[in-house]
Length: 250
Image (tube, rainbow, N blue to C red):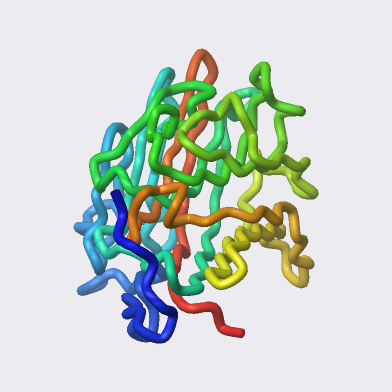
């Protein structure tokens, strides 16, 4: 059972200038991307098929959740936790590609199960069964409860068959990289999700706006945040990079 909610003035956040930043980094010593040993701060907990590597042709670190195989599941969690009584914002770029339909997609999670959490493959998107969680799906395959093969959804309790809210994506989630921004207003218990393409000058669009008490939904006051991804009978390569978590800028 989680502790009783403290007054806002008494809360202690986990923020410095930013809680976590996985951004572009220069390869040390001029080593090639293929030979360089990936380094990151703070450490990540990687599970299943998830791995950390350099982005091809760039000096940029990438979390690869699935690598194009069938029936794969991967998860990656920051080992620094987020205080759920404070506002926070996470931004990242995702690239889901390969495979005819890019099944099945990825999810951004706030969860209280711990850094080893990993769920079901296929339509489970790597988080099915992680009950103490709030997931934001970026879903590229239409399973039976889904409206189509290009949508976002908020899911509570690790059950992707039941959406708390769902909306069509205004941009393609498969094939080209996209940028996402997840924001939580703790005072209003409001979770919002924006997406945009990575094209120069592309406008950001609000897709989801869900009321949810993250502390109540996850059963903890400080939660692990990160990503899950999965494939099934169809496959895809699913990468996340330029990831940051911290206090909202405005």
